[in-house]
Amino acid sequence: MQRVLSTATLLGLLIATAAAFAITERLKLVRSPVYGTYVSKWLSPVCGCARGKAKISVKLRHGDDVTLTILDRHRDVVRTLAAGEYVPRGRVVFVWDGRSDAGARVPDGVYRPQIHLARQHRTILLPNRIALDTHPPAVREVKLSRYTISPDGDNVGDSIKLSYAFDSPAHAVVYLYGKRLIYTRSHQARGSVTWHGTLDGAALPAGMYLLSVGGLDLAGNLTPAYMRWPVFVRVRYIRLGRERIRVARPGARFSVPVDTDAPRYWWKLGARHGVSSAKTLVLRAPRKPGRYRLVVGERAYTYRATVIVGRG
Image (cartoon, rainbow, N blue to C red; front, side, top):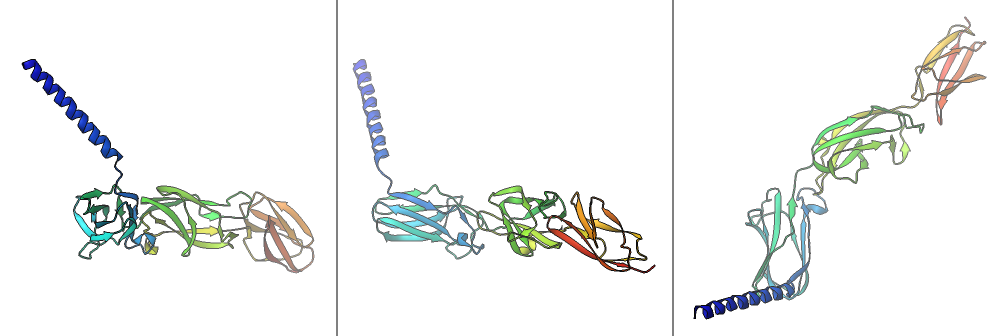
């Protein structure tokens, strides 16, 4: 008798297991009542941009009375976007502005949408996370490879590298007197960008320029102007140390400093001309008193000075 009971018990367990397996497999074949889900990954109610609101978009297989809520990390409801509203089958879109039911902006953090279908007695916590972030990237440091640039196309000092560090991953944005110069595709806390001394594709004139570095994070938060890191960069081309050179008598030697990063440059004074690599150009004045034009140049860039030769 005991053997018969043991056999019956074993048979019952096998039948129950098979039934549970069949039910489980059947449930796998039942399609979810919600599909085609799209949820914004980032939200910044203060950015003043397209990510100032989060979109929750789903498709319903059947019309139902829908309640859609936003839950915080403790699974507490912070906002009810729909409460028992009938929604027909198809696509439906809800929008969350980052505020609670009381109208206050909720703290930064991660939130998840939950949908309840009353007629089907189903509650589905969507796996999609909404990261609410209102803090703009802070610039920790900016370092320059050089402070002087000569964008003359001779491959010597034509560009400058700006290495930056943010307190969080962000796209780097470089400005020239408030106008955006560079926007990086990469989104990281550290990196570098290269500037070739141009604005709108054209090389800038010689002078001192103020650049500033900020960041734009994935939530759309942009480093405000007062938080950007300022750096001064000098743009230079070939230049003589003096614009007016006085020589006491004809034929006398005179010198003038030459500011350039070019290894060689050409010069012309009156009918004479030549090539030099010296940082101080030493020439002999023309043999007649008067005013003469001294021109130095490298590639397409030139600089002129007036040489005044006295009578001695």
